[in-house]
Length: 168
Image (cartoon, helix red, strand yellow):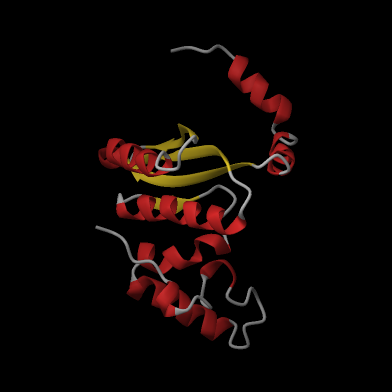
């Protein structure tokens, strides 16, 4: 379905200011966030269905999904949710259920800005113990004093009991 250039021009108009609305919405008890995952074409319908199902388990939540960054082997799915929420712990718990669903469905966590520390408990489960071990070995070799990004986005400081291993 052609939407002409209306959607793109609307997005360009607010692309640098719209993210600041999130803070204002929090003042009114409205939380919004975006989670992105990379999906193979063969798994697209399953990931879309399973992640949206988890997102909708929170009552009165609006969830939108769109596809971007398409490649021959797959694409990225963006799940955007908006809900009434003003409690940081409830947000973390809800956010975790969505990340669990992404990993369980066979998708890979991703984001064009990087996955960040909030995603760290899922990283070793996504990559695999051996592959994650290679990253640890490189970090230990090149930065033995942990001066650069200690723990950081790679989650080397995540306690074992907090790590999430959820792939099917």
